[in-house]
Length: 67
Image 1 (tube, rainbow, N blue to C red):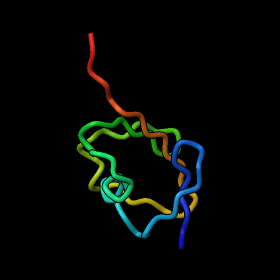
Image 2: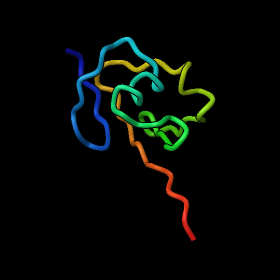
Image 3: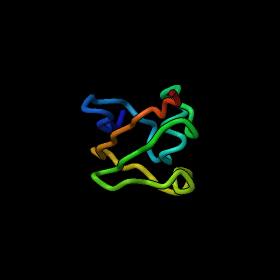
Image 4: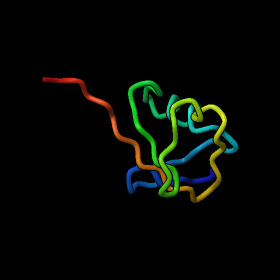
């Protein structure tokens, strides 16, 4: 199975898939994370449009509200 790098760890991914599909497969809520793809910040509105390729590097940060 193809592999992408998410937060420095290899993850199998059912490619081709969008960033949004990958997040859901990783049990991440797309509306609660910020994503950088190969060094480029991705707007949440682009998650469903941006396709992942084998070897892509993702940085996924969970948004936490607090005070």
